[in-house]
Amino acid sequence: MTAPGAGHEFPSQEVSWQKRDVLLFANSIGVKADELHFLYELHPSFSVFPTYPLILPFKLTDQEVVDFYARQKAVKIPGVPDLDHRHGVDGQRKITVLKPLPPTSAGKKFELRNKVIGVYDKGKPGTVVETEQSIVDAKTGEVYSKVLSSGFLVGQGGWGGPKGPATVNFPPPAEKKPDATHVVQTNMETAHLYRLNGDYNPLHATPEPGQKMGFGGTIIHGLFSWNTTAHGVLRELGGSNPDNLKEFQARFASPVRPGDQLTTEIWRMGDKQSDGFEEVRFVTKNQSGKVVLSNGRALVKVVGEKSKL
Image (cartoon, rainbow, N blue to C red; front, side, top):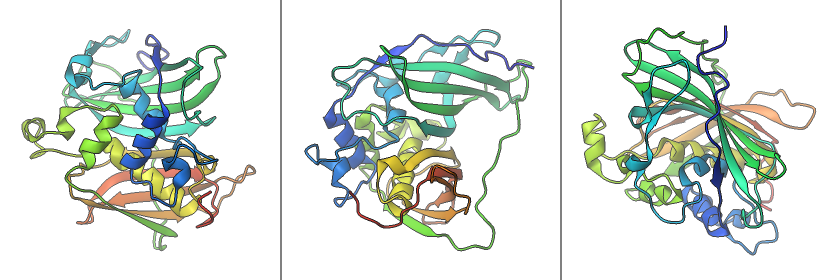
């Protein structure tokens, strides 16, 4: 049975970026000084960090700050009730990198194409909306990346829809030490820097929204934790080469607060594919041992700590 709303396409939206945006993103997720190909625009191998496409649905073509709340509006999906995404939280994200983005969109026109995979009724807690967002060359139709997103709309369930399929889990191997570990120390300004990429949700800038939502104050963007973990996986196993990350996914398990220390443990699964990529799994915890990113899985070309280009 086809899920309600499946296949519905939202109007395409133009997206654009400059080299400055690429540099800002790399700085905001903790890229290190020995990875100059992400941090210096004149480096002969200057590259966009491979998970940058996740910020484009927030940024679109903006070069100025925007009113985050004003931009959120009710989303109409055929076959389901009206859903208000102002009361939504991230569930999990998965990116598949098909082709690296150029360092700037100048000279081309890129579009965000967004379609519904399915909408699932979880009863009183809320509704899950799964979408696929693609970054596409508007002229040629070539797809550069696809992001599968799961969003949870709090309190907007009970409309009689299907519960949806069970989530596939990717636990780390039991009783095996991680093959690599990556540590990130956040500070009180981490979210203020990350939001300049285009995700201007006040929840990550001032304590009042978080207090109203029961978080006790400001929390850091879930996508900061997601992206800085992606950097850690690529740095520790993929030699910081952007060509060595093909897929990356994780579930948002709990909030991260300014000042938290994030430790990612990474395991190789030992099943190298014909193209040289292999599955790795990971989990990210805070300094108290609480999991903040679960269900972590990536496809990486493992080269160890080789040259950072």
